[in-house]
Length: 122
Image (cartoon, rainbow, N blue to C red; front, top):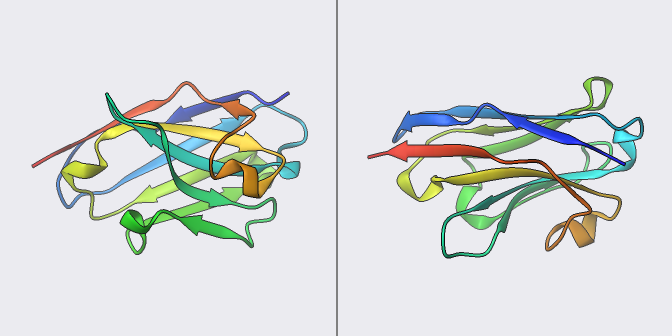
């Protein structure tokens, strides 16, 4: 079992940056593909970025390509999402997620964090 705790959300001006962190408590963190998802009221949760077990495979949703960077530090059991050039459309609750299957993680996850709010003001 993996427990995930997100941090780093907050209020930022358009054009600014934030870095989200997700700390995992499981002993087999490096066995999991990790992802970041986001959700706004009235919409389904959508994937933002995925990263494979060793960090070699990475996928982004088109809307964040070139602006967001996902990374992981398996020694620290932590995955990060560096968000640059933020705009109002990035406002959402961001969730960290984990799954043994990278392909499955695009649309689902076995484990979820509690979420952290990101609000971008314009």
